[in-house]
Length: 378
Image (spheres, rainbow, N blue to C red):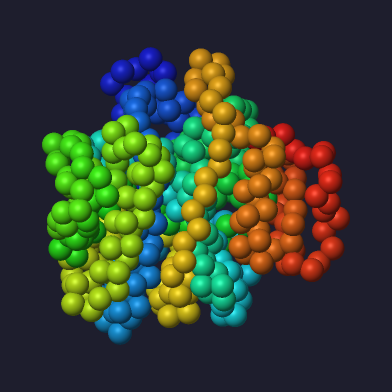
């Protein structure tokens, strides 16, 4: 067994950056997390959304083609986790569903680190309200990772590193007390390739700026390839509106790609399907994707974006984002309402109770808005 100080130790991964975390020892996980290169700046917390929206449109358009089914089979990977509720029944009855979207930073803008999630977004699709609710979870959010509570405090993005998608799902589910029906994981580099696969997207820049070697002029429409589109949405410091301006640019590119991905002439091609099959893993089956493409596509018409707000704190020499119980409760309420579930207390990853409240609206859950005895922020 290599020691923690063995500089030549390398955790093995496949060609697409997926690490067999289920078979790593705790010592190996410790080494992997402590040799992670430091990064600066905000990450692309929207890229996985683009992939899912594109898949919904793409599988809807190409549901009759054998290639689509082959691609779906290639990306399918079960978490082997018992679902918190009957998701098959939910899909059949067109009830709201939740998907945990995760992205690794492999391949995007020259990054090569593999292991942790660079992006974590909980998405709720509600076909009845024709609405998609998205909540971003900061990668440095303080939690106790499910099954690895001895390592508390941990960052939420390390859950995938510890135990793959299964551990990530269990951790987020327990953290917010919100059932997670499905997951989808992609490499950040996959976003660039997907945009390239559809021939790029035409975007009219909202401001003029230069970033990563690319120059953008306000009001001058340009066809952006994958790399240029990433540069366009990544810039933040030169935008007078800061994150608000960047989010607008993100939504702009997302809308353009989602629109283009639903067109027969641009998405039904082997290049797109090949890109998806190599860059993504999900426990959504081919039939599930068809259901999303036919019954849930309307949920992408209106998008409500939000994020868990934390406070930066140094703990044991590391920087964490610590969310207050009040803020966590706000997010829990938002997601449960979007899912049509009753109000319930937010979660606590240090609690011995691993059950998730799945009661529907109207059922008595002994919850009170005046109850201030909530769990701690983690």
